[in-house]
Image 1 (spheres, helix red, strand yellow):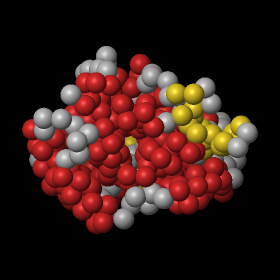
Image 2 (cartoon, one colour):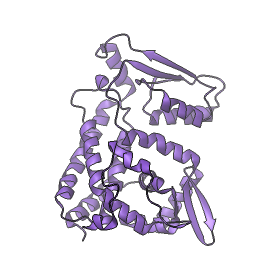
Image 3 (tube, one colour):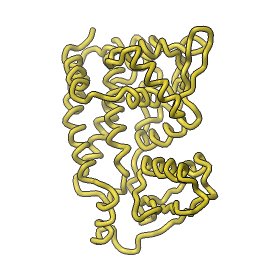
Amino acid sequence: MKSRAVGLWVDSFLAERKVRANSLIITIYGDSIAPHGGTVWLGSFIRLVAPLGLNPRMVRTSVFRLAKENWLVAEQRGRKSYYSLTTTGRRRFEHAYRRIYDKPQTQWSGGWQLVLTTSGKLTAAQREVLRKDLLWEGYGIIAPGVLAHPSDSSDSLFDILQGNGVLDKVVVMQGRTLRPSTSIPLQDLVHDCWNLKEIADDYMRYIERFRPLLINLKAARSLDPEQCFVVRTLLMHEFRRVLLRDPQLPPQLLPKDWPGDIARRICRDLYCVTQCATEKYLMEQLETTDGGLPEAADYFYERFGGLSNKNCHPEDAAA
């Protein structure tokens, strides 16, 4: 049975936020469809997202645009169209959702990753795509043509450079902070590169919006699969919107009482509460070229440090 309180919360959210269809579909593909193989019949996807206020015409227009932007690719089988993530789209998701689901760094030795994009070997188009990908990864522009991030790991950086085919067209350096992280020049640099106050305000609004819903769902005797899918989608859509603007700086460079930690805990807890019911709804609604939706890949259960109830059954979600 659907919860009236959850229904009112969803109606209020959708009326206030006016989420863009393209962006919402990207959230759904990355969070819900990618772990299940990444390919679904468009008709079943239209059925899936109807509770989010997306009508068939809106969905068809959006997936067509996402295909033109190289996020999705279509395959026609008879009269049915199946949409899959492209290689580029999957790579974008992997980088974005690694930041969403993985635990942020808590230790920092003062190391920086630096990328110089001023080389004449880069075309203007390559430079712009690379800049966007690095900004998505949390890099900041510290000078014209120079992007940097306070991190000791370069794995994600090299994945981005290789994925864009520019590994041999940019200069990559590693640096180290020689003065304490509390030094005024370093703090000024951080605030010049990243608008932390605006991000903190977004996190606070996220907390105020989702904490009451978490309390409500934890106290519920039963959970409706459709409502859980809608809640998880809006939860991740909003968290993705805030987090992908958050450079995820090490704690030493963040203001005291940084709200991002609380927002992440609320997101993780709500995700876990709605997990089984959402998976039930996905399995009921979606179709692939081989028929039903396959089970989620093992990596799905590694999200947020490890999801419980890996072996939950459909009846568990409605119990």
